[in-house]
Figure 1: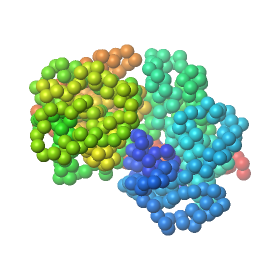
Figure 2: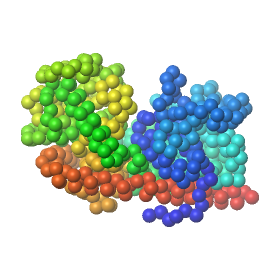
Figure 3: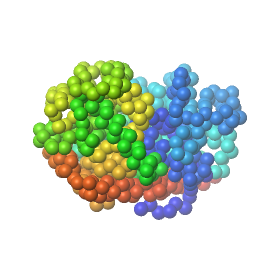
Figure 4: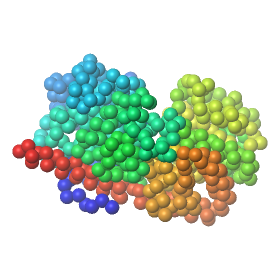
Amino acid sequence: MAKTPTVIPDHIFESSWEVCNKVGGIYTVLSTKAHTLQEHFPDKLVCIGPDLWKETTNPDFIESKTLLKAWRQQAFDQENLSVRVGRWNIPGKPIAVLVDFQSFFQSKDRIYFQMWEKYGINSSVGYGDYDEACLFAYAAAKTIESLYHYLKLENKNVIAHLHEWMLGMAVLYLHEYLPAVATVFTTHATSIGRSICGNDKPLYSQFEHYNGDQMAQELNMAGKHQLEKQAARWADCFTTVSEITGKECAQLLDKQPDIITPNGFEAGFVPEGEAFEQKRTTARKALIQVAERLTGTKIAGNALLVATSGRYEYRNKGLDVFIESLNRVKQAQPERAIVAFILVPAWIKDAREDLQQRLLQKKTVNTPLPKPFITHELMEPQSDKVCAYLQHLNFDNQTDQAVQIVFVPSYLKGNDGIFNLSYYDLLIGLDLTVFPSYYEPWGYTPLESIAFHIPTITTNLAGFGIWAKSKKAEQLADGVQVIERTDDNYFTVAEEIKQSILEYAQYDAKATAKTRKKAYDLSGKASWQQFIQYYLKGYEIALKKTERIKTKKS
């Protein structure tokens, strides 16, 4: 338990690639935390994200023509900053600034040379999203600097909270040019740790033998790794989200976090009472209808609806283990029908037209569509690992199979063309979720599940799993089951998940209700009201360090 801070910020700037840009779990972290921060610091929180929506309206952003109007014009005229200002369309509606960073591409070589000269970061070995991330980070730092002076915050306690390696250059810019602003840098997963696992290398059995710099060279990750390592070193407060990732930071970044800041959840995202039951009924109906139209199979109303979700990291997120466990459930021929959903965004073309047509029809269908395990067309189906494994295991969703699997490879924002419901509006209809992660610094998806009254299965390699065990939740009857996972026990984990699914399928109504309540009750211990204290302590650490620097200079 963090002690009550004695130094608190007067103003907070928080920046991430996922502010008003829903592409991953950090969006959920920031968007749910913002409500609690707004309660503590009303309109003293400014969220800064990339301005990526040029042709269409950003549903997460409510633009204002009057908010900070004079500053916008000044920033453009005097500092070449092109920004839009408004509100993030989430509970709490914090001020949001979207930055167009494209103009900084013409200064890329100069910016990169400065980072090489001062911090030894070799941006020539950056690739993929490196340039976009770094130039956005640079623009975000310039935006913070501009607002800092415009709002006359020179004598205030000011925090700049920056997330992931993608904002590393913002940390370094502020350290160099605006040291009066206290920087907090949070890594949610080290870039090199994720890469080690993503390249099928054993992380845990060889953990103490890994050198982050050496592995970055081997895996062509040097640019991102160097940036993240330097940001962790020079930030006034370095944080990560779990003890397991803290050890990873110490080993691979040569930097022990100053404090662990676990991810909470905002209870206001979960409907209550009659609204909850109505949304649950709507979601179950939608899930079953899509499965029926896709497979041509009539699915019982009491079918057990199971799912996994999250980022498409086939091994890291345990998608392979999830499919393997369901194959074992299928072989056991359970009496109760089971429909499993893989809600993981992939590279899609569009929604399947044949499935859309069937969903519009009222007549009963009794034949499966071609590839009756996927709801959307993929750009490169031949290289998709989920599809390949489903086909390898003969998950053809025939009418005589007790277990059906439906792969939904689209972001669920309410406009996917099949469900047309958001992720939370579908999640609420599930009975059980499974996240057999191999690499999971925290694990937002299982936390979201229990907040929606859905029991979940996770592993001891997830930060959330470790936290749940610390709260005496280890078996499914506790609301969260935490399975022991290692580098080598893949099939043991799959067998344990199979047994848990089969057992839960046999729960009666009373046992099910009791387990769902335990899941929900546990989520209350991971609310932002509980966890915000760790962030406030992190802010205090950063502000005290900045104050010491100010005192030394004076």
